[in-house]
Length: 148
Image 1 (cartoon, rainbow, N blue to C red):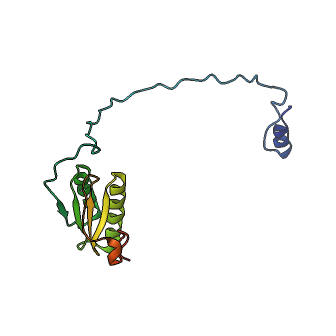
Image 2 (tube, rainbow, N blue to C red):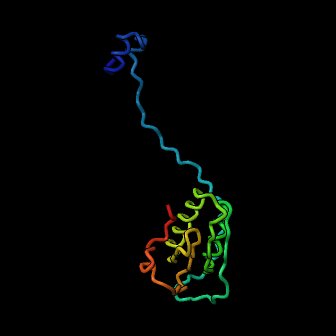
Image 3 (cartoon, rainbow, N blue to C red):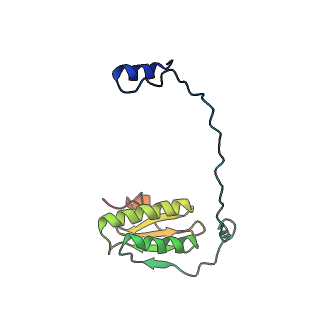
């Protein structure tokens, strides 16, 4: 019984000392390679990057979302290069904030812009669209955040 922990357990009565003289040979475990199963992979269709390729602008989409789940339709159109106007007047303030946060991340991720038109109307413009108008710093509006 060369194991001090085992000796302590026997002394405290937590283990039997009947096997004290028997030391089992310790063999290193044999590594077993797990069976590898590969699932079939469906390749995604390749999309044309917007850089260098400017799609023809023939549509601006206006969306009046009622719930946060309407964000998926906004994202699909924006990814295709369509400017999107989001009118949040029919949403609760909490869901409207979530949607503005989502739209901000979407526009940043796709190198577009988000601009506040009014207190609850926002314009998402893709990278290839230039929006002209008054400079927001002239009117006191600097960020596209939701009014708090």
